[in-house]
Amino acid sequence: MSSQANEPLLLLIDLQKGFDHPKWGARNNPEFVDNAKRVLAHWRATKQPIVHVRHASTEPGSPLAPAEQGYEFYDWATPEDGEMEVVKQVNSCFIGTGLSDHLKHHGFNQLVVLGLTTNHCISTSVRMAGNLGFDVTLVGDACATFPRHSPDGTEYSADLIHDTALTNLHGEFCTVSNTNDLINAQ
Image 1: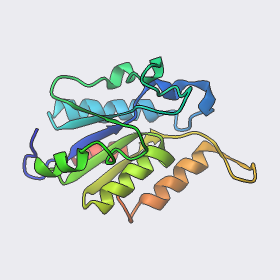
Image 2: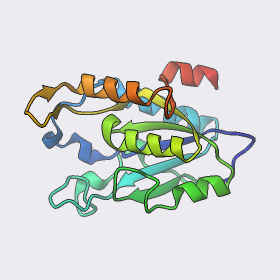
Image 3: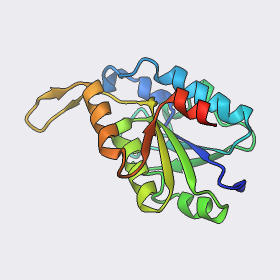
Image 4: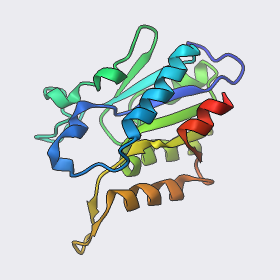
């Protein structure tokens, strides 16, 4: 897997069945799966490089722990031949994985990112990618998250958390785009 003249690499983060577990609450962005599928299908059809990132939780009882069914990728997001898989244990796909060195060694500078969850692993990975010098496009409508509670107990909706995370990333660590604009620009 080597870059072909600034070819963008699709980085799919944590597209795992464990995020369907009820413990997380109601996920926002009902179009998330359809949009993620469209981007992935486009990348595969145009034979562009893809890296799948899987979270291997070390937290007891986590639906994303390797011994749990939730550790599995969604059926539609399972890596195919020639698509690389990276396993991480923290929010960033660049810590403890060798991913940054691998991408730089093979000439990848442009990353297109999507996945779960917007305010956790997506945000952390996109921030690090930007700081590491990658040119990052985040497909905002192909990401999703869940409601969160503040330290004082206030519940914030998943939509608010998602929109705030995208707003904090755009223009600083990445360019936030959407599925249609991304595919049409290719």
